[in-house]
Structure formats: structure tokens, C-alpha cells
Length: 137
Image 1 (cartoon, one colour):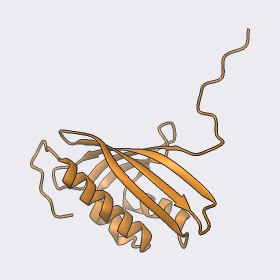
Image 2 (cartoon, one colour; image 1 turned 90 degrees about the vertical axis):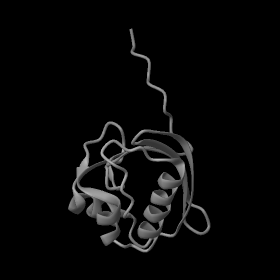
Image 3 (cartoon, one colour; image 1 turned 135 degrees about the vertical axis):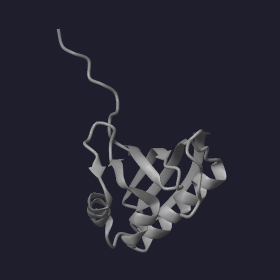
Image 4 (cartoon, one colour; image 1 turned 180 degrees about the vertical axis):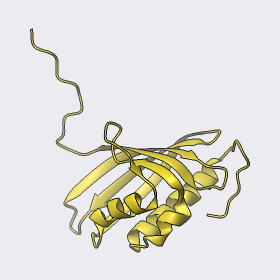
């Protein structure tokens, strides 16, 4: 990205949304080299808060290949930005015509070089229950 943040940040909404636009551009173009521009070498990428992290460029690239060749739309807006941390609401629709949609929260921590060192996705989609089941008894 080329945006130096200093040792402790901070990032601002404009910097965060520029990073998100670069993410979308690389993802859409199937540009796996974009992973290296967007994420630190030892970045942690969690596709869900309770799943293990994909760690490092190679693991993140492999994860990105799951969407290889898929048609999608994407929109994003910042929810919160403080220090080196940001939360962005992302809406993704797959297919033309639309076959699947998601609403995500991306929780990110930026490194001093402007790349993300920790990324966590909270994906939601229609028809799936998100409340915990009550224990029986």
C-alpha cells in the first residue's frame, strides 16, 4: 500500500477505505500478489471468529483461491476507526443473477507500514440462524 502509519498508527477512515478498495481490486482481478501488498508477511486472517487463522501470505492466497472465477458485487462502509484498528461493514453478492449474499464485518488491525496484520471476518447471510441454542434441561 505504501502508506506509512508510524509505530502506533493511527489510521483514518480514508486510509481504511483505500485499503478496502485495493482489497476488492486484487480479489476481483484474482491478483494473488495483492495479498503481499495488503497483508504483512505473518498476518493472521480468520474467515470466522471461531475458526483458526490462515497465517502468512501463502495461506491467505490459498484461501482467496476459493473464490477464483466467481462473479460478485461488493460495497463497503466504515463502522469504526480508532488507532490502528478498524471495523468495516461489507456487503457481497455472488452471481449474476444473485445466488448468495453476505453481510460481513471486517475487523482489522493495521501494521505501521499500512498493511493489515490481523483480519477477522464476521459473515452473515440470509436463512442462517445466529443465536445460540438454549441448553436443554
